[in-house]
Length: 133
Image 1 (cartoon, rainbow, N blue to C red):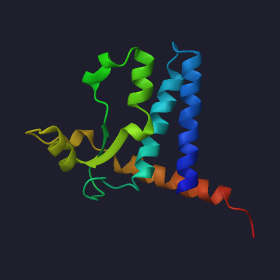
Image 2 (image 1 turned 30 degrees about the horizontal axis):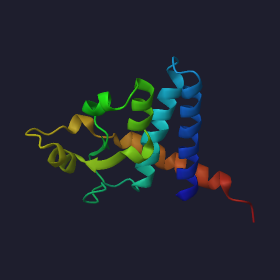
Image 3 (image 1 turned 180 degrees about the vertical axis):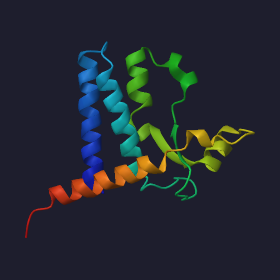
């Protein structure tokens, strides 16, 4: 898992470096966002970081939207908010508890297809990096 996680982190770093060079284009930000979300999911071992559940997982940003005005510019906000270490993986119940919500928000759940796809990517990556015997 460590090599795959390092790969995702490296790809996010590259995307954000490109974004810092050309802040007005969207593609590096979208790539950085996707690598950040993927890296956080892999780092959490596809489990809720609060209770260990494996179903109805959600991304939780530790730097929340209302803090946008504390970060001096939009680029700094986006790269900080979507950096992989700023994203926790929580199940629906733990996420609801965190935000003190009255109603469930299962529509925010990370799809099973996304999780299975990322696990397959991880397996292919590990297989491709192993040296033949």
